[in-house]
Amino acid sequence: MVQVQALSKGEQTRERLLDIAQDAVLHKGFAGTSLDEIICEAGITKSGFFYHFRDKNDLAKALLQRYLDNEWRIFDDLFRQADELSDDPLHNYLIFLKLFADLLGDIPNGHPGCLVASYVYQDYLFSQEVRRMTTEGHRIWRTRFRERLDRIAARYPPKIEIDLNDMADMLSSVADGAIILSKSLSQPDVLPRQVMQYRAYVKLVFSA
Amino acid sequence: MVQVQALSKGEQTRERLLDIAQDAVLHKGFAGTSLDEIICEAGITKSGFFYHFRDKNDLAKALLQRYLDNEWRIFDDLFRQADELSDDPLHNYLIFLKLFADLLGDIPNGHPGCLVASYVYQDYLFSQEVRRMTTEGHRIWRTRFRERLDRIAARYPPKIEIDLNDMADMLSSVADGAIILSKSLSQPDVLPRQVMQYRAYVKLVFSA
DNA sequence: ATAAGTACTGTACCAGCGGTGCACTTCTCA
DNA sequence: TGAGAAGTGCACCGCTGGTACAGTACTTAT
Image (cartoon, rainbow over all chains, first blue to last red; front, side, top):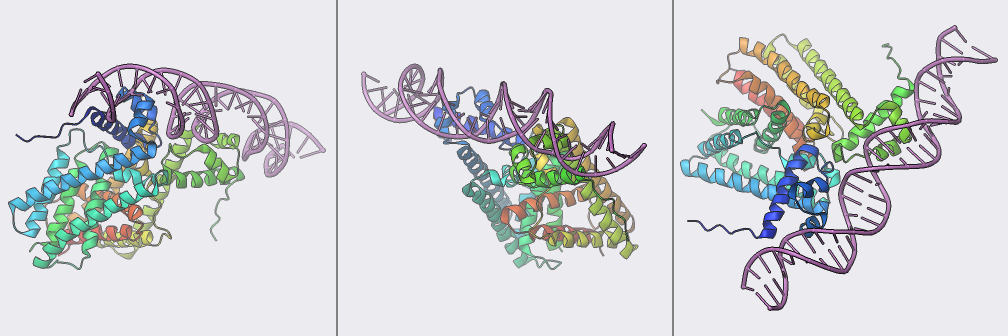
């Protein structure tokens, strides 16, 4: 049995505050989310909140850090799974995209929203540090996907002239945009279907 | 010479208020945008503001309506231009996408942000009426693009099995997502380049 | 010339918000 | 059992959206 490090009481409260805050932020924006509603739902006092976070910007930062770490972990998992199923770079990537789409399709009420996208549309509210975190997040995703595409292109010459950075960015774009469309139309399946569209594009560009 | 209906003094002020508000909302979110800063920048008093808008939600609605109407007009223009240059549905669509990408690339400091996307990430702040407007906007775009794709598919059988609704949605997705990426990375050219990626996909699916 | 809108200004007021500071208490675990 | 972790309670601040209403300057039709 795997021994999971138990969370202390303080860490549990902190996580609960972050859960409640994230849900609220994704539906009302950061400025529209009041501390009062967070502490009310968490059953804690305002002083208790400030024991965990210096101020509201500190909450914003912790929220984003946790979100990025989690996304990170998910992509690592999926890539690892895909790599175990094939040695071919193209197949790896296509498997990864299928696993990703499946994962997104399995979220009960649809994807709750991308915190990074939400932050980008409220950039003036945040410190330079937080803004740099969103930028860095996107840059890292580009690099990770780009590495995979480089390996693919080395073995399968693309059928059309293409910039691999653009193709890497397209996954982020399609995902971020499809989350918005999914939420707006209340059609959770739009998101996984759009990822599969991107997959179809990759397949057409590299396959024989 | 075309006689353009001149704006009355009141309409001018209203437009200025909307311009200022939109810019602020796209950078701070709706709740994060204070009326005080809007009226201050517009050089008007609070009473003056409430002469033009019943309350803040009325401003939100007017802002979205104007944005949707404008997007609408732009797409109509581009489709009309494209239709004048060719009779073939595939060429029409490809020309439209190129014109669209060029237009986006010509925006001086990059696209300021999609108000619809911003609203979707703050849905709880708005009345049901405003929320329905964003949904309807996305539904209409899907239908418009879908019509074009139907005509294309009738003449050029797609190389792969594909759902044309998904392909129509993909343009919205890619555009919305690429705006976020552009803003986050401070690279305005990401947006037009992503539209061209979508164009390449369409071309691969339908071309010989 | 004047009367009737249009497009505002000025003032006063309200509850709720994010945020700060600090003294105090209760819980938890080594 | 004692020390630190994890809070509570309370007082206070300036800003925010919003309401109410009386007054005024500008424009235009008659």
